[in-house]
Amino acid sequence: MKAILWSMMALLAIGPANRASAQQTRVLIDLSEQRAYLMEGGRVSLVAPISSGKPGWSTPTGHFSVFSKDIDHRSRSFGSVLDASGRVVNANATPASRIPAGGHYRPAPMPFFMEFSPAVGLHAGYLPGYPASHGCVRMPRDLAARFFGRVQVGTPVTVVGNAHVLTRVRKALPAFL
Image (cartoon, rainbow, N blue to C red; front, side, top):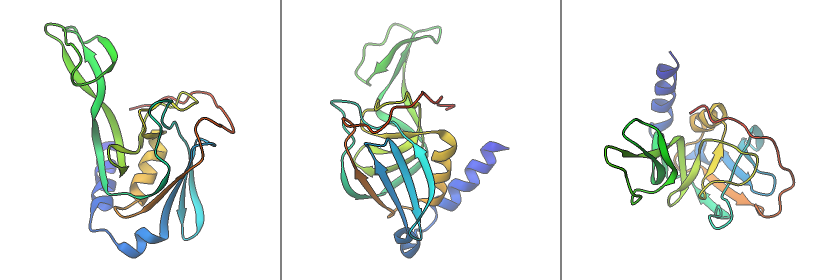
């Protein structure tokens, strides 16, 4: 049932972009607060805790627009290496990582991906309570699905703040991917 609901949401969200509606909806990402805000009609409609880029992999700041959406995105840069029995032997792998005989590389899942800068976007993922991604903006799955359903291609995204100067640190939130 959930899969059907997510598929219906995706079809509605991916349909032809209504430029006026996209301009009334905005996303604000505050790296200092580690929060993302969905603004609709000038008001905050959703707030999500996030995990942004870790040191050396900063989330870019500035003004952007969502230019791509993918409900079942897989990373092109990072993932895991599994051995022949399916055990993870390298949880921080790249496509060029060594793969043991009989093993394979599995790209990292990034459900509800909303790309706003090349190879950087908002998506569902694990939140350890601090900046820990390779530049993307992770959020809880339920909130990522809600953002995904309301954000269209063309929606403005503003990224402000500094992940090195956090205003709060919170406990980890599970990914439920």
